[in-house]
Image (cartoon, rainbow over all chains, first blue to last red; front, side, top):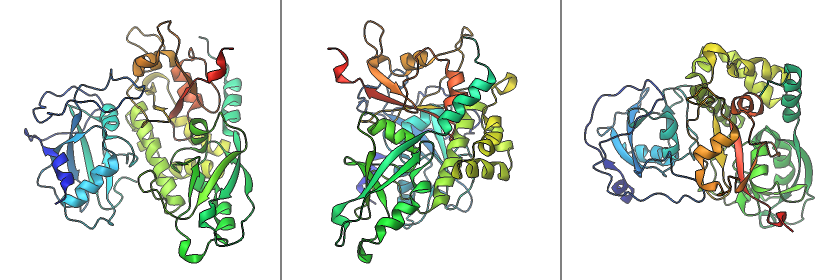
Length: 140
Length: 279
């Protein structure tokens, strides 16, 4: 496995989740988040950007995608959506050339260059972001 | 603020739809085989995406590039790779709106900037990106209920209206997505703030505040980017959308309904103020 994996830390507290509403609540279980420093904020504020620099991402397979043994990961806010799909491929030992589609709220595919923190701010719920991954287009 | 009448609203939407930018396309000289082809001048629709309107450009320039150098075409302006999945008008406002016209865009066939750009395999890739962004916007406005209750042919009509620049065809479907009365009142306003130096900012923002008042563009900027306000309550930057600086007192709901890009997002550029403002 590559050195990238050191940037992902499995979080504790694996619990079943449902992805119902777009309402977000601050999360409490951030013992893994030793790195509290903020990403560079040239001009932009950090009022709505919570003090933590990592967010909980729950990865769920869709279609015929293989299941990941570890589903819940703490990901730095400023990582891109594309970074998550590369990570999943690496974790599942898939060919890097293979397609990997990510979906939020089982509905839309966020643009690959969007920051995960931004996706979380708008579409996270219960302190985490649920992302479905799929090898083919699942939700057109 | 009283609502402007419907006919005037429609005129504004039509003006925005018809917005064009003169662009001068030139090939990157190092990609060239021998003779230098002439630049191509075209009027580009602000609301469209480059891959939908640059087929001619690709065909024109590729003839001058030797076959082993013919990679995927990508565009650049003053060292800035241009993201094909951003509307053309947004790219222009963000990087070039203070410069002279026509907008001089450089065409490349080699050294694809993997870090900055996503590959664009076909127009279908643009379509799928576009529909996905509309879904994302409707998730914010109506919890996705409007877009998901539509049929596939409605999605196709929306897309083909944009692709073929057919205003009436596009709006006959888009008006359902823009429905904001009663039960369909927007939960959040789909917006993004773009900066030339950092990734865009997007947050949840309600059209009406806790006291029941309509929120304005000023309210949004005060909440989302408080550090960009001066002590005298003036905004330290310039906000641009569709090439104009909107009044900060505009109600955001009205803006969302009438000034959104076809992907249903308000894409605001946050630019530095021109330095020559005070003499």
